Image 1 (cartoon, rainbow, N blue to C red):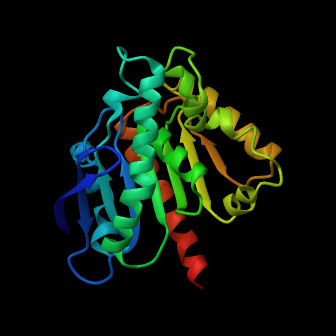
Image 2 (cartoon, rainbow, N blue to C red; image 1 turned 180 degrees about the vertical axis):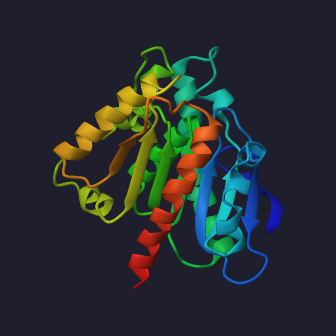
Image 3 (tube, rainbow, N blue to C red; image 1 turned 90 degrees about the horizontal axis):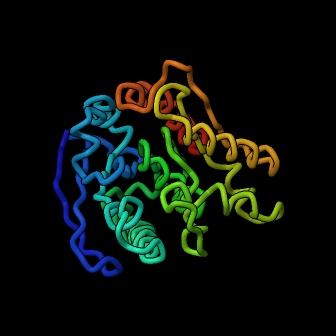
Length: 257
């Protein structure tokens, strides 16, 4: 496996952003997969918690090429000092960094022409869901593990138009039934998984809202509730990733048949 430490200067964030990429040494690069780290994480987060080793066979066999990017969560979701309005602007800037700058750059590095998988655990899953649901034209698949999909949970109930756009339990129910995204969602592979063990209460609550919304709008996304022993922790996220990743790759195979 080739591990590369990359740097991208973001115009929208006005700073260097770091990316770790993981690529097969020989043969195809595979489907591009964008990982958003867990809360406050940097680009080494996924590796440090054993997830790269966990899916190394998929990387080394050329099935996926993984890109893990820094977060700026300490300025947005995690900041308890700045006003929520300012925090929302930082989150929206991060979102535009991803969709306007990073995704095209990853497309050039990957070179396969495939739309990305986006994934993450905990707050990384929240980011991944926002990306996949706001821009299904860019992301073919989403694997969100233990996300919380209500932005107001992080803002002590504060809500404005910017946070609304970053809060799936708010914007998705108001999506018109005839919105073109409904048809696009149904062509994608969208997965939202949460355990029912320790530290998963908000994840369960918000996943149920997503599930009800998907059903009401006939969106064929998969919301999967795992057992009461399944906690909000890396031990389980590694198991879940091994379960869902091959299913997503089967989706790509069907697209190419």
